[in-house]
Image 1 (cartoon, rainbow, N blue to C red):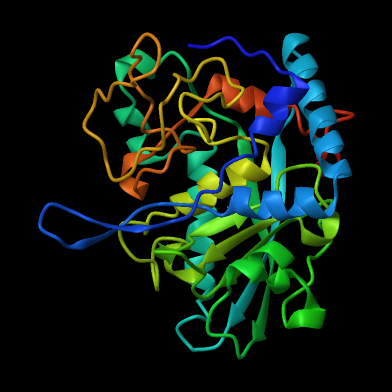
Image 2 (cartoon, rainbow, N blue to C red; image 1 turned 30 degrees about the vertical axis):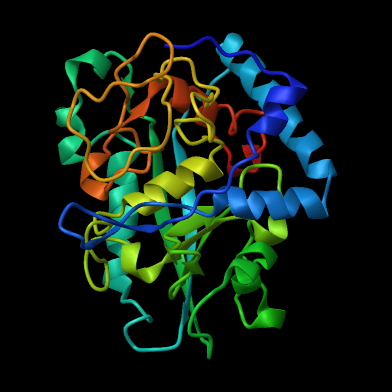
Length: 324
């Protein structure tokens, strides 16, 4: 496990990589979908447009580290109201209320360690596997027809789906609601994006999570290997200030002390134990929600990740308006 040291230089390196889903081939020459999110792609665009964002995010990071050191964490129950905004062109893209509710159910299980596969956590990591203790409540579903067949990289960087003036849906009370936008495909070079999130510190007018309808929930249009609702779990993790577990760099840092150092993202469902090539060759926590493994291959957060998320909701935290 690793010691966390934060500096301005380290902070800036956190955002040097862009991660998108690609289509690779397996040993039989068949196309294989790999997980990817555009969170860092979008963040790069936001940092370029608003240099003060880096300052705000660094302030949030300093607050997070202090809150953890003083054990100034949430003691009460946190319930996150969720507003889902569906943008559809076809009937299939206008996913059902039941499919949306199935996603909320997954979030509630994953963030309270009541998911059935949590028990699969290897004994090596059982001491740090966490019940985050945050739940989610669906409070509204907004639907809007669109003529768009897909949402490009430019759409993501401009957050087109989040603006009514560009055919999207404006967020509903984003300081007190988690807004989730459900869209059709989000193409990128070599594949498609599953989703992306905005880190704490960004503009409220674009705050929230975007998901492709094919990886939302567990029924309806949800398609394997991303049909267990874990894309939302991963993206909400970003929304709650979690980095990718490999730190978006070779042997990078995710600013969490109780996760092993990963040399890179993992895809598919790696065979345990999967060893890192980084110093000490630690066993990688490939089952962590902040890796890139398939839905059935991820099923846990850690206590360190829980502490980062909890620090957002205390008095003075970046999402304290959600209350305790």
